[in-house]
Amino acid sequence: MRLFRRDNHRRLLRGEEPAYCEGVAKRARKCDAPEMDIITCPRCGARDHLQKDGHNRSGTQRYRCRSCRCAFTPTPKEQGHGAATHEQAVRLYLEGMSLRAIGRRLGVVYQSVANWVAERAADLPAIVSDATPSETVEVDELFTFVERKKGRPSS
Ligand SMILES: [Zn+2]
Image (cartoon, rainbow, N blue to C red; front, top):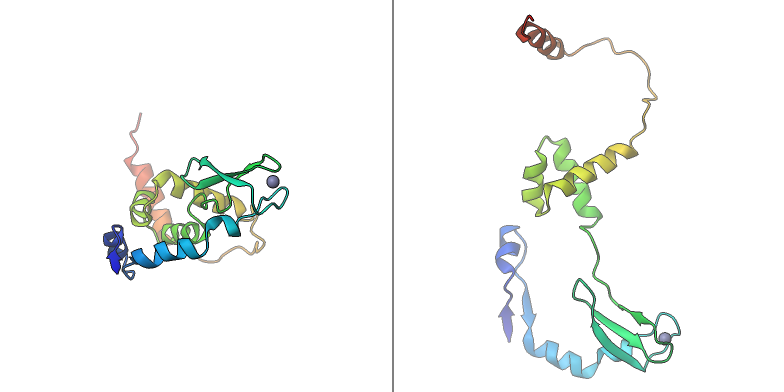
């Protein structure tokens, strides 16, 4: 049985393949290999005596080890947006897209985009190693300067 997943309209909008969830297969897998068998305690290495212990803030299952009493999340959800999204955001910014437009495109708040661009800028060397003066000057830069000076109130 193939069930069409709810988030598929987003996938289709992004030009991705639609996703299906295999309802029956999923249930069968759970019986064959219960999660408890794979999970080990990160502190004492115990494979059993593990007890489900609610969920963390992002909704991932937490466990508590009954041998050493430590609590842990075996497969925490990745926080943040990932390096690929950062890269794409910076590239779009360099292409001249506005921060808000990038935010809408990538589905993140524009302040995040601003932070990533600032981070990338901070990584750049402060001093340009090639100090050879350039012989050409962009004419429109000068033009803008003159125009601005002319436009200033004379007070
Ligand atoms: Zn333990």
